[in-house]
Image (tube, rainbow, N blue to C red; front, side, top):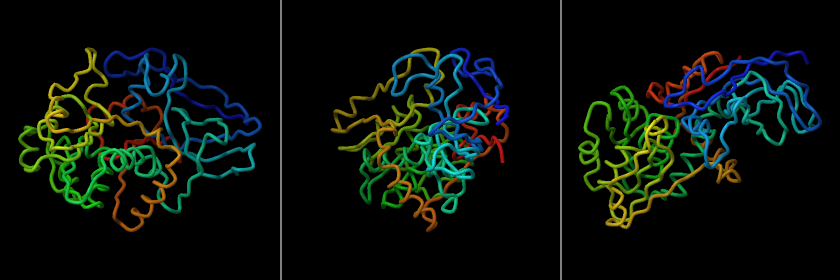
Length: 335
């Protein structure tokens, strides 16, 4: 092959919001795949709040992206050359391809996907890591029961919108917290949430009291900070708080703000549990099959916010931290 591959490589660790100068936009000739490997043309990349954490030095659930390494990202693409009998040219696959146009990876590091059951971009959202996070975080940690009240922050994002829909399917009352009237209308009018709190234009604590008069049984947290504190004041006895993310804190240049209302956990005999989706990898196929069935029956909706052009990556990533996306933020790399 004689293919020029463009890539974004991390050149310095960001202070605050990432900026274009934190990466180098480089190019190199794509190497030929070796035995057991495949070459993949990347078609779409998933942009996730977790990417900000991957750029930081320090101990975490996954090693940080190294300086001069291709920026880590999950993507979907098309096999263009295969040295493994399990995959053929033309197969669609997902994997950790990085922010680049092409990737050469071991065949065991990718998952073959069937675009007959859902559009390709859905495998980065509802049928991808975001959907898996929602599924296992809500069901395994939240343990919803019919009639209980579920509140989810970042509710119009890729994880939050799936959490709310899965909770509704299981007979729960669901309230979403999102930024802006349009997002709140989307939650209630399109996704069937029972209520929505607009954190940009109303008092969150008051909104939660109004929409959750009997309190909160499950709080699925994607944002941290003040909104987590507000939710803790409204929990019921035996409540489960799922700590999935804290997007309000990722770009802090000061220490992370912890919950000052944590004694509510003691008073209400409640639990707060962190979750990382990779812990459930051996069960992904089960979850994908169930959610694909729900999508096919019209009970579960998927929405992707697609931005074109790999060259826009640094600016497009910032949409996550400005709350500009609705649904799963996806970067289109090629047709």
